[in-house]
Amino acid sequence: MSSREPRGLSLRAVSKSFGRGFKTVPVLRELDLEICSGELVTVMGASGGGKTTLIRIIAGLEQPDSGEITLDGHTIQPGDVGYIFQKPVLYPYLTVKENILFGVTLSRFTGEIDVDHYRSLLSILGLEGLEGRRPNELSGGQQQRVGIARALIRKPPLVLFDEPLASVDEFLSATIRDQIDQLHARLGFTGLFITHHLNEAFQVGQRVAIMVDGAIAQIDSPPRLLENPKSLAVARLVGEPALNVWSLGVDGDAHQRVVAFRSASVHYGARPHANSAQARISKLRPSAHGWLLDGTLEDEVNWLSSSGERAQVQAGERVLLFSPQAQRQESFVFSVLPQHCWIFSQ
Ligand SMILES: Nc1ncnc2c1ncn2[C@@H]1O[C@H](COP(=O)(O)OP(=O)(O)OP(=O)(O)O)[C@@H](O)[C@H]1O
Image 1 (cartoon, helix red, strand yellow):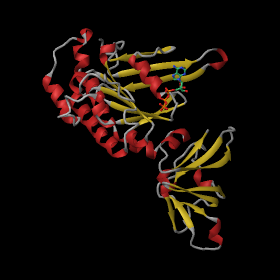
Image 2 (cartoon, rainbow, N blue to C red):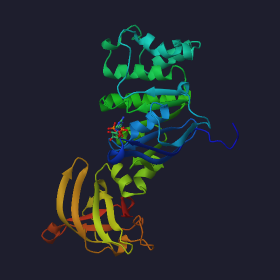
Image 3 (cartoon, helix red, strand yellow):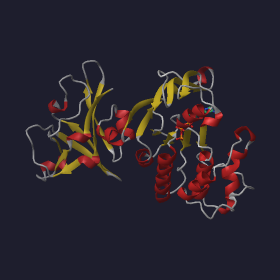
Image 4 (cartoon, helix red, strand yellow):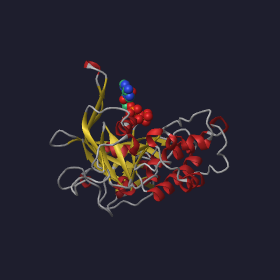
């Protein structure tokens, strides 16, 4: 491999549509993604957005219509990939040990069984003592961990996780996430973990790729995604606590402009400030993460950047939102923390 060839997983302009003629549905649209060698990245996106299609294509289970996919500069071979399915696919008549070792004993992957590696997988995944059981004698979470051990037994350089925690509760999910992190630190594989849960996306791996309309809209660390989403679609997907989106009308280029802010950043009882924008609240709706506010801005001057494009409200600047009740109850005033407030043109 020449020094100019990329290390890690590289996807360039990968496209995929399903169906034919008028019924063609584009699922991936010239998707680009670069993952460093040894990095674990989560891909988060809405349900039905194409995440499973993406990793099936990387694994060679589905063919792309166009685009290029390489691992460390080479075409990916079946033996390069460990695949963890949403629902573990275990052989019902084989024991836990036989299921885990199945891949090593297959003739095309013939190799020595690394007993130390096998033992460390059992230990990290909490499967010790269960080796003689069959899948129907295991809980769903234990079956999923057997599936993870089976995918990792050959130490593949690339590991693909297809929403493996979708059907376990949050407590167990947190335990398995921690085990996946330990395995990644120990084995150093390049990994892609797909999910539509924000918690999972933020707690597994180093960076999160946000998938919107069949492409990666932004790839960043969790704090950067929270503080500086590049578009309204990204802000909505990382929008727990709930995101309020208000129209600011149309700009000079006929783009719709909106201001978006998180409910959790709304504070009550703040004092008016010289650098404030005012708004009337027309409706308050409760959500699990705070109030969702419908309203109209009365003074938007301080919300605009000098270029008139998307801007984050300046640090130290206060944005005040007055509720209709304020006229009757003088102290009913909201303020929004500026670092959780953005302007988008779309
Ligand atoms: N083999 C197929 N034939 C036709 N359409 C398909 C096929 N596989 C997937 N699709 C469609 O492609 C779209 C993306 O599906 P995909 O399973 O990749 O999404 P996803 O993001 O993984 O969803 P989820 O999070 O709900 O699992 C869906 O509209 C789905 O119906």
